[in-house]
Length: 394
Image (cartoon, rainbow, N blue to C red):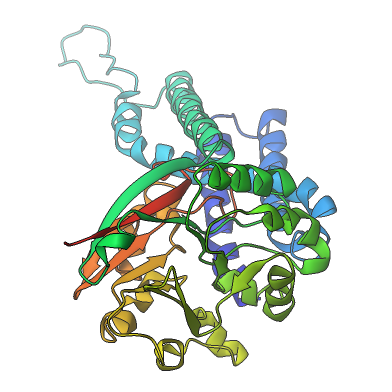
């Protein structure tokens, strides 16, 4: 309810703004066009709210009929508001000039006096309609491009990381990192199959799925996740919870992934390849479900001579990791911002938006994720699957 309130208020204000700019400013009073436009705006608002409410309460096979139009419209609304906002200043300047020129009184003995300057309705309508059409074209183009990015193949990235403790014999060890797959009403089994195929083609040493696999229960999405059983790697596949697992029945999903051969790491770790400590901690959201992260438990018993690779959904946990000597943390959660300009908002909460960085001696890699949440749109943050190649300092 709080989530819907927090999102519903700005969404309602956004539709009110669109009604003013796209309906009131572009139509004459008391005309059919204005009434139709008002109904269309109200219908768009209800369609979007249905996507937010109904898709959370019905199975994905039915929820997709609400999710597709609603979430696509959410992206269009967002970029329409931006386009109209950018056009606001030139629009006002043009409207100010859209007046009748002063008309002098007929010549006579007295000095000519101009009549009152009044707006030219036709010119004002032309300007407002031009701005509306231009903004619509711009928003539609951005959203269309963003959909091709979100629904296309994830980028395959190769990122080398040098670890001081890594033995020279293990140099070249490769970790396939994927996060934020977000199976749900818009992404199903074919999305999982594509990800599994792309990972298997890389012949990784291990696979790390770092949270937010699903947006729904095992009963709803178990079939969509089933292709994960086909993941192939030399030393196994591993999973840690993200915040969305806790909204989707995390205990059942942990059991399901274990059944599919993807090993959940719940504040625990193991040694792979005889010299790399792979450790996983629960997401911070788990604290509200009595299943929060426990770094001390996860790292207990680890060989301090071996490098530690930590799987942790949110980059913000790197502070706990660095204070405990973790060499490399693999995370997701941010989506790289997903839709510009949200990439400028992410740093307000997280120490990294995307890519490789170093925090107090710990390498942090943040994946942009292979799926999306909400609108099936990615602008400036294409999806990715990353191959981390560990290299020895020696």
